Length: 122
Image 1: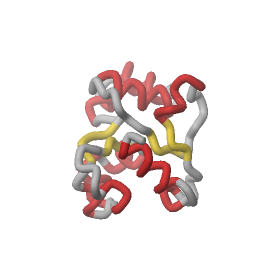
Image 2: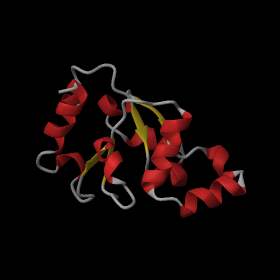
Image 3: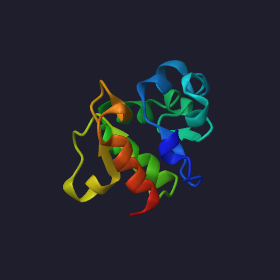
Image 4: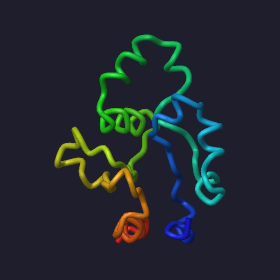
């Protein structure tokens, strides 16, 4: 991904229903190599499917809550969610969100520029 080519410190965590449906490795394998090589984990883990409490929590949680839970567990500080689901994002956490239209994703006008700005720390 050219937007992150000069930002080797940026890693990707998947937050998509594909991981739950197809598994992490298969989902990761569908991605272009430039992105795939940066994917380090996912917010959904197969161990959650074996724990009914985790699965129940997940099913009732907003995407924001799912992402925040992962960020807290992984002790992430500088993170950004690129997401088409903006429901439940509180104003004070919006600096962690790059909203995009689900039909276009990062190809939406302005998204790549916003990602570059975030990655460069400007």
